[in-house]
Length: 264
Image (spheres, rainbow, N blue to C red):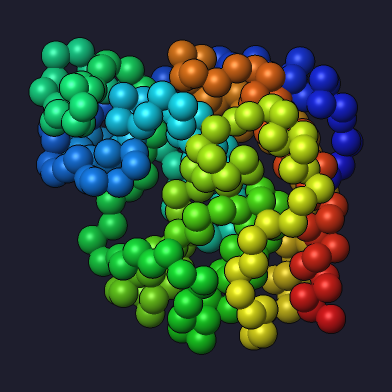
């Protein structure tokens, strides 16, 4: 990335501003799921349906995973990678919510959210359907994101209404691979390889080169702007977020070189 900074500089640049979410939940539609995050579906005042993950739905030690999902989803979008766009949804006072289990109840505040799709299938295997839609291009972006953010527990959605076009989602176990934002673990793992996304045969060569250039030239200020969107009352510190930005910056050049190796 351009304008590399020390980890300390990244930490000092974090200044969260608590931007108001564009949507507020008004009704629970279904859930919670039996997954780690106990996600459930809501309808919001923007007339759209979202799957939301609340702080109360995640075990305390893994609550930073919501910040990871927000940051990496937005970084993926900035790089032109096929990801499920992350949103923030406000949970109002006085609304009835489902029991999350173990005596946990949803509390008012801000939740991580993604739009609900009516025609997708989730798979946790390596990226599939490469010959469908423009997935040769989309798979290239997935290889880039997994390498950049040291992906783990890789998960994808396939849109059956659009020739199985692939979307990467649920990035809460990237970076530290634990659902945490452990500063020491990120420092120790910054030079470590990511999991394999499988056979790179058939990936779109021009897209790999475009992504390599994007990784080499994206501005640190754009990453910092994304870090600053994380709500200030979420249980992650400025040091954790700043270290995540540094981690991505330090890995970017190597990830770009790896993409070019795939072309050759």
